[in-house]
Amino acid sequence: MAGPASRREWGWHPLTAEHAARVVDDAGVRPGQLVLDLGAGDGALTRHLVAAGARVLAVELHPRRARTLRERFAGADVTVLEVDLADLRLPRRPFRVVANPPFGLTSPLLARVLARGSALVAADVVVQRQAARRIAAGEGTAGRAARGWAVEVGRPVPRSAFRPPPRVDAVVLRVRRGRR
Image (cartoon, rainbow, N blue to C red; front, side, top):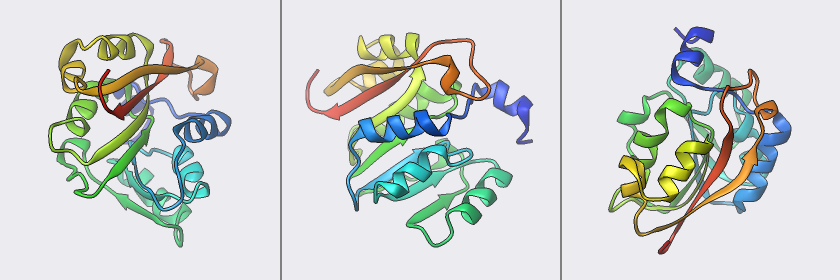
């Protein structure tokens, strides 16, 4: 079910339009780049990625949200994939990730996109601040996967940037090809 209970269960908190715009602006997305919005939800980030000229793969598991995304972005360079992140086939050509996934999926998601052989070139992901610090320090599954990548804890995302607000602080975790 795609209601508030599932939102709480996974720790998904949609960004306000203002803060979604900041995340996309800070990511430096350029026209024509392939960008994955993992856990696209209501399309807050997708909207700004489209405005930046990106080719967007919006990944959303929940049928109602996926249908809404298809309707909202009909005619735009957006492909909506209704698939679990664990089952997603990553692109073979270079891609970026700009996402606000459910907090509970941060580690497996990052471990997947940072895996050896991935065509990922950069990621800007809204995550819990404490998780970002662990990942940047090379701890845990995602932290180990991030070895060999330049990882930094970026812009703070205040609780007021989400509807509903989470009980934890968040930041944008920035990942780029290259050494720490």
